[in-house]
Image 1 (cartoon, rainbow, N blue to C red):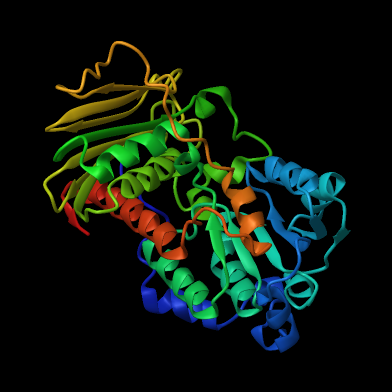
Image 2 (spheres, rainbow, N blue to C red):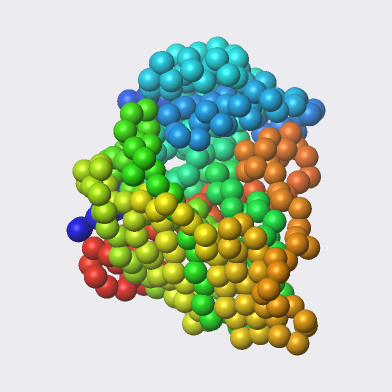
Length: 379
């Protein structure tokens, strides 16, 4: 079947044009933002911060609302969503008031940052508007509907100087941190192959039948199952291979049960790096198990994560794959909690940059394009 990262034909010029036009549909005008709003958000204040949730329809929004509610020294002043009922449900968890529009939030000098959990097609308006207002930004992934849009959004964020974070949580896992350490230190030798998988049975279980139906509509979500779950492991892949450069990609993306018309349900992508390393990435909503999450093969060793446990084999160092490797770095905090720390001005762990998030968008877009054209795409 022919599937694509939605709106992949949108050019960078059109994406920038759309952002420059402001957010008329959401009643957000960049001219309305006072300089005091930006100055307040960019200041390094005391431990206490004031946030707002802008959009609450993402499937992770309920969990994020709970994290905002229980976080120390965090006040949620506003909730806003294009669906008022959604805003009320999130407000019941976080407290605060219902904003009449995003503009009300962006123009409030008391608001230090925003947590954007809207439908993805709203990101092109909301994220740049928040950046222009000087609000620090946590935006749920993906950043844009496609690579062009994500790169334009990243440009707007970078120009503003605000903090940015997104929801790729796999970097925070201790086993993944250990694998990255082994790759970056050269302990595994020259990396030849990587395999990554992130799948669940959401389509089979009807997870997206009701409240989260938009996530299976590529007109609103930008991607289907492969892009939704695959983007997490694409981020992990690019982060693990930070000293290498992806140069080409392709993929095969399909439906299995066609529960959601026009929405892909599983796929595999392939990425080749400048070094010659080749990676395969799986993402889907029609899998009943995902035992083998990560495999890395190098000329000096091998690492795999099976059922959440890390197994290593490094010849000559008496390290075999018979028992799980338990000497792991401490898990990092959840990405949203790292964002809280950063907005408070605390010296903490690195955030995921807007450019990194856009790079994931770009690779996912090109894998879809490779599938549709049945060809390799240069990155």
